[in-house]
Image 1 (cartoon, one colour):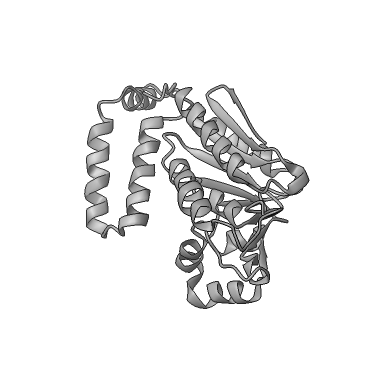
Image 2 (cartoon, one colour):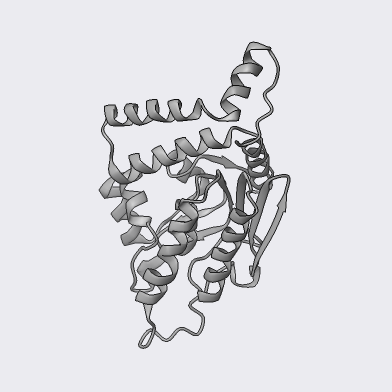
Length: 256
């Protein structure tokens, strides 16, 4: 279900259950978390997440689930949320190549990823109106922050799904590509990041997380930037970057 390969400092994590549009049951969630743990232990400098088949991830695998006995609290609180937190705090730049269905928990996987490149034909939104359920995995927060209350509730009430192009135009994700090009574009971006100044990237990742979670005021954020710059001065990549600029050559970063 979850495949992991590592090459040239980049972890490739693949949701590989195309017969069910990569829908996730408890076992798959555990395996996905294990893949991130293994990638971290290997010291990768970038990670790519993608799905096989017709879609990225259609959400929770509800085949065979009996709603009268289903422990949805365990699934969401004990399984999904810890996984999304682990993904969000992964100690290297993370990228997702998304196509087809990106719904429910699948949308949550994208929210927990640093950079999302999405196919123009992707489908993003809240399909839960047809299930008598509600948007989860961080979808309310993302939609409200980027779309506002009216458009968020419109999507929830109607169940309308946005295309990848509309999602990018609305500020939900980074860039949109034709479906046949999104994986290659994501691979190229992750490969560049894997040869970059990893500690500087992580400083930015941590600050963005604080801006998102703590709503830092402007001058608090500036102070954080200043402190980050001072701490990065002691890294090998900082010294290499300055030396390469002064010597008019390409820097060779090691991630240290």
